[in-house]
Image (cartoon, rainbow, N blue to C red):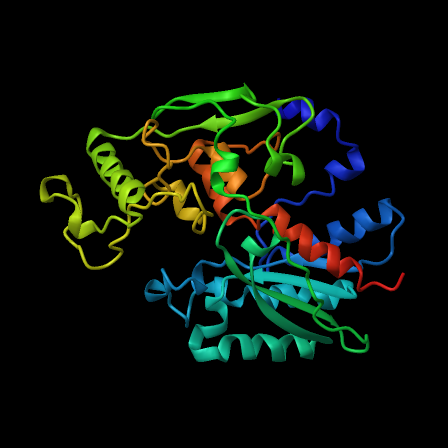
Length: 344
């Protein structure tokens, strides 16, 4: 399948994809490859750079384990700045978690702002929530937008998307699964799903891919059922201290006490993060008849990926790619307004 896809990609585009770690050793070679690609396409300028360093060092969940003096991921914004200095785009867009703003008591983002100014760019930022832009997920992120200092730009107003859809609108037209089951390629149970049609997640061919559920052991399924019963009847979350002692696998009942969490079918989902690659405890499907964690395709829909978007690798890799991604509808809303900043 991969080979068939690549045969459809023009050589000049295929060879413009650079799969390399950005480091002091590799950055000049990457610059050379980009310049070569620009020359091949007869372009001499880059107007926009979009990207962001890994968010894990700034996540409030994992900050206790971060060595702020030595973790090299914390300095990747410097590499980002080198791309700005090399290619001089008019604008750049940079995404990360809200914890970026409080890292080192705000010193980190202040240093970043000074650094970007030193390479010729003003920047501003806002905390935006993907739920306001059509994504069925509560996902706050810091969006930084920068521009060349001489340009009369400012952070754009990004209009919100008003709707009343819930996650149940995107979970009902795919095949029901039991733990460990999968539907690599499936047909929609019902063709007209307003959310999927309005936001173009369904495809004209009428199929979805990679509806893959992970297996669960009997003990976890008991806890899932308990969490589902509590959520569906009381609208309250299961605390780990409420799990019968004979079912517990962790001694700590005070930290991360909500480690088992049901996706709200009548509202929007909580944030999909890369940890979903490790286990599904935090993303239990709301249908007790299925009693499992959400599938690859269901997680992708919550992140607003279209149904024919194909993820490569093992199941855990698919989940990690989905959890790390910027939701597509969120990215589209930002891109649409950034595009208007260009006067040409």
